Length: 220
Image (tube, rainbow, N blue to C red; front, side, top):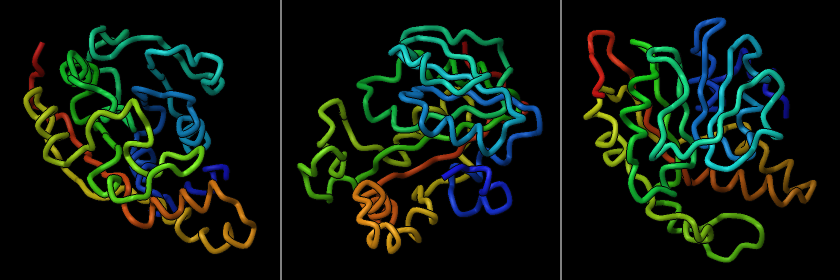
């Protein structure tokens, strides 16, 4: 679905709520963009925003038109952006792959504008309760062999608080559109959408939203 339809009903998807709050003409950086599927939805939702993406693999061919891509290991490299240049940074389904965050927290804090937001999302403890071995779909946390540890709200907060970011919201990340679409997907036998609706319904992913306080000086 094209996310332009979410512009006035963004409350149906937590990620859409966060992106819709970016000031008009603002800047968004997606760390660990992977195939850019979600980033493309962000562009549909807010074509007025300046988008940038970073990943350690070369996904330059997948980046939406008009978006900048940089290949970089965020745990060791310096983000190629000026200090205080981003209104929103999203880190989605990346941290569960990392043994250590390395330089990333300090770099995130440096690049965020005062008052800017960080949105972190990934599989929580509930992802361990799902059946394993569902073909071509990461249903259980350990279906992905590159996963290290499920995320927790306190764990995410502890990574970013020491660089001056303050949590403002936390919870389960859900798309009510996918949940409401379960019935239609079942009729159409759309396997991928059925499974996606199930993981959103039962709270597979958690999120934490943090803000860079305007009076805070970030760590170098």
